[in-house]
Image (cartoon, rainbow, N blue to C red):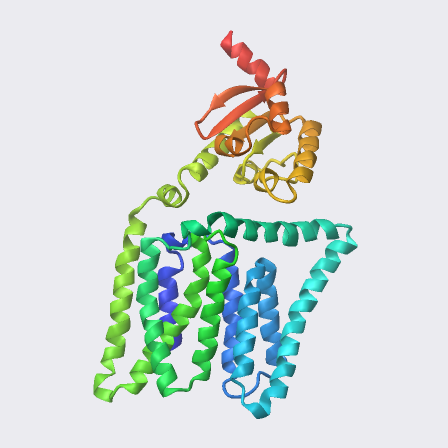
Length: 397
């Protein structure tokens, strides 16, 4: 029953717009592997994990860590809770289990780093995964902590309160009536997940998707426990409880499905992604099949939708606007763009304001390209003397 309740809650909530769940981000994959790894720990019951389960759990957490390294908090805290809650006589076996568990993660990362190093890209891998991400997290905390950005949206908070109330109820009854070990592991999983959510320091709403599995598992266990501890004539209360929670969640979710798909994007991000999609189709009409364009911004969907190869491997403006790699990457990007001489340059106004038009690359674009269209979000520039420039001149005459 606990599993059915958790699965039902997941079906209702996993696509919630308040968590930005309708367009899955990395968190969807993290949740799959982290939940599977947690399940392996739980299946051990009162016994040790044993070598096979330890390796399987390590594999799930290792794969999750390749998506986002913040999951090290969940692996570490869950392992600690497992060790502390293991009977004294079985501690040595538990330590062996955890050594195997950790060795899988170490081996996975050694293999990935070794692959890039063997291909001559070890430094690039280290810069992208370690250097930039370390700056990304630390700079965010110093810059934004006073704004309390980790306050979740009201809609998301409503969902959390509904599920979280069952989770807390189960936690209390679980520690009182036992067995306690599953609840200890679940509490460790939930606390570690909150640490993972806070670690990047940016507090985007989709980060909170990571909290859904531990809360839903706890809610499922709570309902199942309530059914077991109530007298037979009152077991209907457990079904009524989850029925009320699901009804409230359904009422919160139902209005989203009356909103057109484009408005889901607008509600979450403003109009930038709708405008990006529209612009991509416009670019296809502007350019010939063999012509290229470059965008100063972070809308990689322009390249994806038009199926046109970007002139540089640096397709996001974020790492060249700020951070430890900015000076090196901006020079590489400028060399790539100058070499490619794309027929069209697209500038995201907001991303240009962040660095100003004095940036050498943007100065070069200003000298060699002429504005032909402004969408208020994007500015389109044609290469001077190029086909688009000549075509626009003919139309003007």
